[in-house]
Image (cartoon, rainbow, N blue to C red; front, side, top):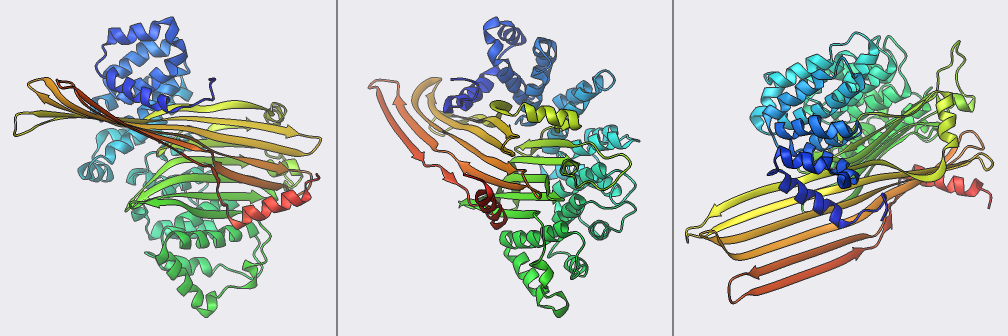
Length: 578
């Protein structure tokens, strides 16, 4: 079937392996890991050990699994970030593990810290008392963790620390990031600080932060503010209204008939539009603000020559749950510079990220001859960061420097590359309920998701065209069983199994035969196969067994994108020779 194949059995098998692994001894684990025939599934066993979230599983991973190869550390950390077990002793052991690697392997230290931040965030979110304890700084392990990774003097250290704290956006992280804004630190550090603040709860936002963000937007800080910083500041300020109504006044007072930065203002207008689609109160608020004579829309809003945008799209709504996407894009000098795509699920006040991809680049415009005159031109660089279920993975550098960029271009021959493969536990519960009749009901429920991210790129210098395809193969399953017992003997059983498998992906076409370059992006979902099976059985005489099965296929769809992307796709099609 190959490494790119995914079926409904992947997630179901992983869930049941985790369920059985809780009862396995260290001797059993060692025998399984050391068996030569199990080598192809060691990465899955790494996910299993991480998902268990216990001191014993960490000990087995360090002493046995990691000895088989350093790549399995990433598998363990991915599973640990999504562990559904809350063992505070395991948290301490993870801190010791992180401290042991600080002097000998700095890269591994920051990888563990990135996972540890998510683990501690889930610890803080577990109960109301834990939330209050973390907010007041009384959770000692959380305070120590933040102090350890933020003990920085250079910007390089600050950048790594802030990228980690994005997974732990509590009050202490927010205060730390706020102090770095509008300062003498590098652009990369301030962008990372803005990401931490954006991930934090909007209830933290105060007048001090708002004034700092307005200074960033108006480019009145000690260092020049980049377009990307201004756009991130706009994202945060959009979350401040309508609670802080003066924010809109401060922003709209900056409007001019002839703005210098078209990309910044185009993004601002699109941000107002998308926030109005998301929230009716914000729509009414901005409508009332524009009624004031001094804030009435001017011609500049329709005359901007820019490609940056922000968009919000609702995909589905069912039972109070809303599935939607947010996307943002930044352009510099006609070149694509930054993008953020996030698939989210909202229910009442809870809003969680299911899957997200962030792409950031530096100095790509220099390849188009649009770099401003400098004594030492910046080297091109591109980074990508993937997030899965509210856990942002470490930043992955695609290329750094002209040599690596050309190497990546020459290697773009269309072959498929597996970017990420992982398994996430959704549920693992087991309980027994005694009944007044003397019978006992045992209920067990287990569910998981398997994910594979695949990508392929091709580049034609002759046609001056590049194409990139990406897709996510997703397999989800949920198994539930109820057993009726009488003095340990099974009287009746009822079990059900639900599964779904599908692929979500897209493609990006870029034509760089002219400046500004033309780009077209499409998103689609392939056919989804859903299956359900329920079995009701009486093992005692007279034996009875009833099975119900159902299978359904949902046809694939191509998602409707915003007006700007549609215009870009039409332009690319018109200018592409047959």
